[in-house]
Length: 105
Image 1 (tube, rainbow, N blue to C red):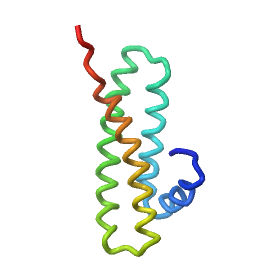
Image 2: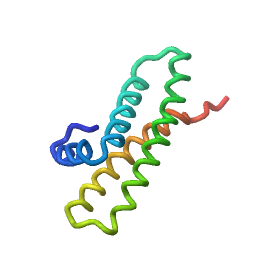
Image 3: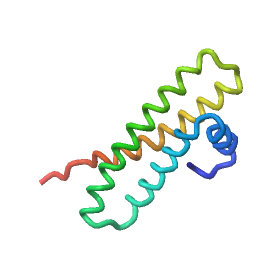
């Protein structure tokens, strides 16, 4: 999860209310960090599969959370929107790892 001050309350809220989503976002961040480091071809293949799985899991858990948006108060809506921003950033990066652009010959 990005280490910015405005994400701190969201991180605490997720830890208390949706620990599985927070855990999966952090797992995705570790995959992203490792994928940007030097990796062997075998490790790259494994990271692609891990990234696809993490992205899918985050999307499923986020969908469960966003269904609460319309019945929530202003603070909870803000936290859900902040979580959505964080998760969207992670899933976008994970998707680029899982489905790298094809090299043109």
